[in-house]
Length: 461
Image 1 (cartoon, one colour):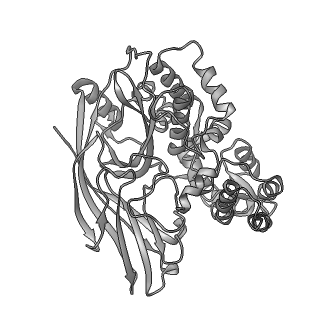
Image 2 (image 1 turned 60 degrees about the horizontal axis):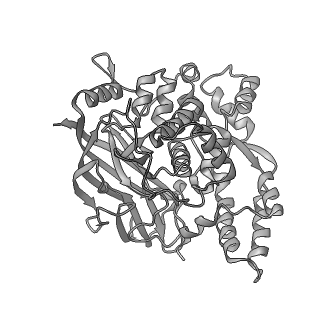
């Protein structure tokens, strides 16, 4: 069995003794108990697979939570010398500073400071840190870039960008050994309704093999023995087209198709809570478009953006988001997708990059199907960013529509590569930045560098 197939059993609960040790951060003890269980011949195969994944999760969790309280305070005070312990504790209690127990001690999320800067403009200003990313739009003639694009789409009905990107990965020097054999995967544009004229412009090394354009998670793959460390890079170009749908007064057919409405364990699962939530949010609504709109409105108006630990270590992402009211673009996308499927609305994952003229970053969103309109889009993360910017018109735009600043590499969640990985992926569900494995194991994100840059992004008619 493909190792990543075992993640489909992650929704199975842990035995109580293992769960208690994990909650306290006694990962060595939990791993020891897992080994005892796995050695039992009578263990159900499904639970065996779930525990096998859990053992690797336990190994990876500490990478995301390395900071002691003193170290976390020092990280803030390097920018804000008068930041008090009371302020720190208030942000911990308010969920702004992520933490978990490691060995019975509170340890803090390694990206908590960047998190605060991204989600709290006042904190970022106090820290003297400029905010970058998709929500920090560039002004063009006094109009924000995303608002300008939305206006053009409303006026013209469509907008295309010709985009060229260079991306690559490289094993970190401390992880490199001369003579190591590697298998490398980098995401590249996949065929979909938004993308055309897809070209691989340059490969280094030239031996890379591109997957078919219709691959569920499309990559270019290299298999090399490295006598010297080197980067693996790809340059590609494509045209990305956004088509506007005015859904302000649209009505959908009451009878809808039944494809793409099932569960996808472990993260798209119709738990009792999510079923009840979907029913409550859609009470009194029969129109499936209105149901989807209610899901989008609830997420975008109530959730708070936060950077997340590695998805590898997360469990039941959709329900966790609905309980904690926090997440990132992929977490919000999975919650919207799951609620839609709970309500019988077909929904699919889509991801890759946001590709603006001066910014390139990993991003996830959703397609959902409503007859007679066909496939529509929802980007809850951009909707939440619009709420932070007090821009209701932009929030509404990202229900049904997307901008033309995208690179789609993945049309499915939790799909294998065309040339399969042999070992654990750094991200077992999605691929936005690339993967590397050796002849012995898959490398974690901390063991290789990833880079990407926009070489060109120009509007075309």
